[in-house]
Amino acid sequence: MANEKTLSIIKPNATLDNNIGNIISMFEKNDLRIAAAKLTQLSKEKAEGFYIEHKDRPFFGELVEFMTSGPVVLMVLEGENAVAKNREIMGATNPAEAAEGTIRKLYAKSIGENAVHDSDSAQSAEREVSYFFEKNEIVDRF
Ligand code: IDP
Ligand code: MG
Image (cartoon, rainbow, N blue to C red; front, side):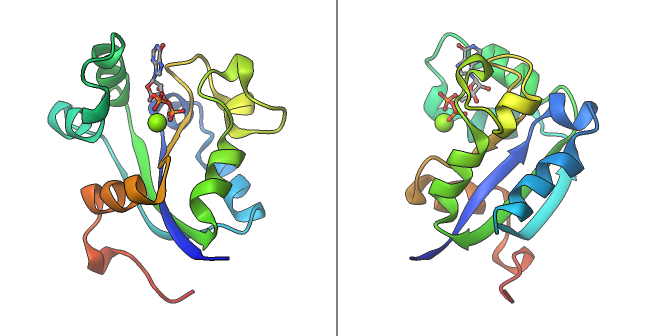
């Protein structure tokens, strides 16, 4: 199986609820490693650019407003099959549909305030990782 990198974001509802550690421990328990991390608050421009694929969706304004409303933790996660593995650990977009034990089942408030983002494919992972991180900010020692 391939060693991959994927982008993860702990969203403002989860940072404000003090669930950063709980969420990171879910990644670590599932053999994903943190290869880069920063805590920041996104500007409107940065959040809009990140979610550009959703710009025509009805919830775009709400999404950008939420993502800029508080601190976020941006992380590069690394491990075997990291992209698919993170999707599984994270759970469905809507917490009402998320499987038991997933991050969203445990820590999401609603379909919008759903605790975490991850990259949905290897191709998005590449774009999303380089959207937030310079090459020299990513550790490659694992
Ligand atoms: P994903 O995060 O599970 O991949 P996407 O469909 O890519 O879900 O949507 C991106 C983000 O937009 C979601 O994580 C959620 O925060 C927000 N979002 C999606 N659908 C809705 C909605 O119907 N209302 C409000 N926000 C939504
Ligand atoms: Mg998505």
